[in-house]
Length: 320
Ligand SMILES: [Zn+2]
Image (tube, rainbow, N blue to C red):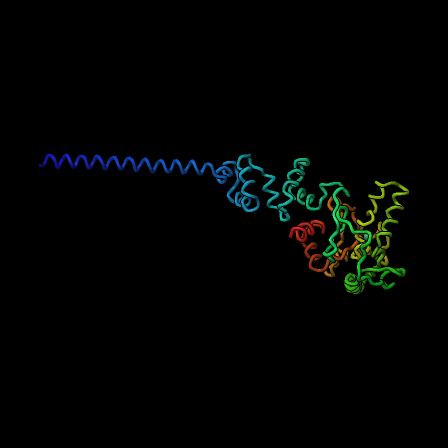
């Protein structure tokens, strides 16, 4: 009896030992398998490639699963991370950002995003869109967006010759009201603003452009004037502004009136449309006298952030 019991006990221990070994093997197996599975994930591969957890979150947030999977198989793309972190990154332009970067390797992510967002990765006048006049005071006209020859604003008013030497000049009423407020405040500060150019019809712009083109050719004309349809003056939202003391394109920049406008015009909804360092993005050399009405909210945003109206339009209006 005693012997049998002992034998039985031995068998029980043996069986238990076997079960234990099996359990240990299963646990090890499961862990090995889990580890193998984890190593197949994008997260593991991206961490191995050198991305931080925060960067991986950014990739997953801004890109499709398929795009993340492709990235996980490649080396870390530092430039891509910088582009995704840019304040004005637009997802649908990603391929163009990467293509522009490839052709212009020294360019910063900021430059690449700004360039593509303003379409200046294409030559002027080679990519053409109709201006959406429904955007009203925020409509975009540049060397990629143009107005039809038949477009003219419906709320044009005559400008009093107190503000413009000469008769018959017009501007949109919303702009005129804002200008008068601005004129009065400038006047309170000893500055006498004078408008030198306002609403221009398509035909008038054609005349301006053709006169340059006929005398010195297309390249020269393009460097100095917008082609008909591509001038902001046709919107009725732009004014060329000088002062009583500084009346020419060569002496207005940096004058007291210009300085005053730089610091105050946004409060009335105006922006200097073509600035010193934005020629690459706007397509126009600096024009200290060309002021565009965009309304107080947008003008204030642009005054506080270092971007052009063209970029604002791409990010907030077209893709907003
Ligand atoms: Zn102008």
